[in-house]
Amino acid sequence: MSRKPRPVGTSRREILAAGAGALALIVARPARATPESMADAIKAFVGEAEVREGRVTLELPALVENGNSVPLTVKVDSPMTAQDHVKRIAVFNERNPQPNVALFYLNPRAGRALVSTRIRLGDSQNIVAIAQLSDGTFWSDKAELIVTLPACVES
Amino acid sequence: MARALINVPAKAKRGDIIEIKALMSHPMETGYRTGPDGALVPRDIINRFICTYNGEEIFSADLFPAIAANPFFSFTTIAMESGRIAFRWIDDRGQAHLETAEIAVE
Amino acid sequence: MNRVLKGFAQAAWFGGALSLSIPLAFAESPLSERKSGFEFMSPESQATQQDDFSNPGMLWVAEGEALWNAKAGATGRSCAGCHGDAAVSMKGVAARYPVFFAGSGRPIDLQSRINVCRKTNQDATPFPLESRELLALSAFLGKQSRGMPITTGEDKRLEPFRARGQELYEQRQGQLNFSCANCHDGNWGRKLASSVIPQSHPTGYPLYRLEWQSMGSLQRRLRNCMVGVRAEPYPYGSQEYVDLELFLMTRARGMPLETPAVRP
Image (cartoon, rainbow over all chains, first blue to last red; front, side, top):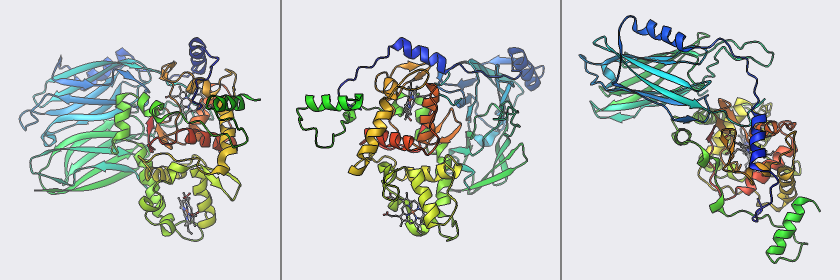
């Protein structure tokens, strides 16, 4: 790079227009999870039980640079003792082709109800985490995620 | 060949809660993607992951195509006694993998 | 006079250097003004790069280490059999590539240099460019220089190739008629669609790009930028890519190598 500022014959507007062109992606999408199919998947997990908000904390980045790999952490406020612990944590999404993301099985040997992974998201959407406790109750948290598209991808 | 990177502390005090990390080499092919020939690439994901501590299950997971390629997990366990922490996973092609790590507990 | 030479002539004039008969020095921007692509990433992606048990690129490094120690080819020799401990013999090596290769009278990048050893010293089939094995070995060698300053371009014989790389960098191309410089020198820090345009310092290659869901070389990254402006990308291994790599690495001199980096 030369040290002196080089005149660049490109305005910001042109750049943005180019970006739009470069991003004209044509993607054939399969049938996708909808809020309804997520509701069905949740029903399959909890049955007739009531799902309460609270005790679960779902951590996701506010803005995602690339939906191929989104860090996700779920924490549940639980002593993780033999009498009172988290048995399962399920993660669901609204807009991927399938509503299920992962189902984690925990027991008191964990010491703490804390799990992290990285997930894929094709689109901005809601993510739901539901924990089943040893007393049979279900608790949940929800997060909304904005997924942006990267520039200069392979055709 | 490197199939996974596992992070378990080599030493811990009895009763300590330790963090375990596992990073596995796998494309996690969703089954929704088309290949260069226009045909769908068959689904091939790790669908089950199990972690045992001296033979007893401490954590496991059922996985779906929404888990990122080269899957990563972190979770915790209480250091109980010295021994072996084993990680097993199986993918859609039926390939099973095993990795182990030793832990010294005092 | 073409733009490149004109630029140099002006720089020389401003600098008070009147003689144009000496090889024109390459004007480096001050280190303090240069930013790695790392600085433009989200805190989450930065954390992934910095934790060796979370950075997926480390899977390739581990695989590269296994390949380094494996016997291969008709000679049945491993890389380690000749080079010993990579932490000693390969320390700082990746940070000075591409280098001038007397065998071809041209610069050679690290991947192709590895293949030279594979062919002539192991008597084995060279790994295809972008193959998992070659990326793994390059990542493993790159990791031996992690944190060390880039030193590419000291050899005077490289100068015409670096200049050619710079010319390619400044030349408009593709249906969108953009040069690399239009984006990376003139508009870095601004947004293209939702990505921030970096300064294009190749500090972390080969690296794990989330978009690829895999490891890739600098040539693959350059290919993506060319496709982005609707230009016909050069074939892998072409002289144009090596000259561009040489220019970019020389332009990044002094910046620490980050291999294996993570990028969006």
